[in-house]
Picture (cartoon, rainbow, N blue to C red):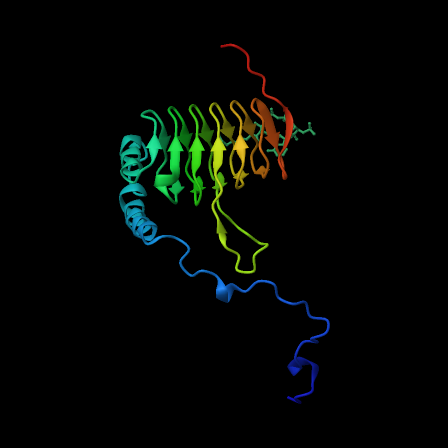
Length: 201
Ligand SMILES: CC(C)(COP(=O)(O)OP(=O)(O)OC[C@H]1O[C@@H](n2cnc3c(N)ncnc32)[C@H](O)[C@@H]1OP(=O)(O)O)[C@@H](O)C(=O)NCCC(=O)NCCS
């Protein structure tokens, strides 16, 4: 091919934007050695004893997670298809339930209250990057989900979010800001659509 043909020419350097990100300078190992060791052990246990445990063996999965530092109430349950990245940064109160497909990407601490349900495929994302820094360093903010909350199927809960007690988050919602207690929020971005009716039993 002719060296001066458009296909082989370098991009026009006057119009090309400067590339801000320098990922070659990003820290290759952003976690401590202890955390890498714990993650390795937990991933082995997760991929075997947790993932392939019988569906109703809630006590067993609680035991495995608590052995790696999680705090979980005695009547709470997690299905075998739940993925928790760092058990030692996970706290769940009593009588709460996580359905199959739930991912707790807890680079930062994730806390869930009592009597709370996370339906199938909810993604709790307590990790992000500082995009103002060219090396895109990891940031590990917390997420807090209150008591008496229902998060419906496929919702995404972003970093630094707090979801108040008794609220409901609709299916496939994208939550990037706090949700007040007692509200029903839905959509992308999630907005309060109404208050939750709470009649006495
Ligand atoms: C959030 C939810 C519980 C609300 O149910 P509801 O009280 O019957 O809500 P409504 O139908 O009165 O909706 C109120 C408004 O919110 C909107 N809305 C409700 N759910 C929504 C959702 N998931 N995403 C976007 N908008 C939603 C409705 O369109 C309606 O808008 P409008 O006022 O402009 O018409 C329900 O919509 C939902 O998401 N259920 C999830 C089911 C699920 O995940 N099941 C699997 C686990 S068992």
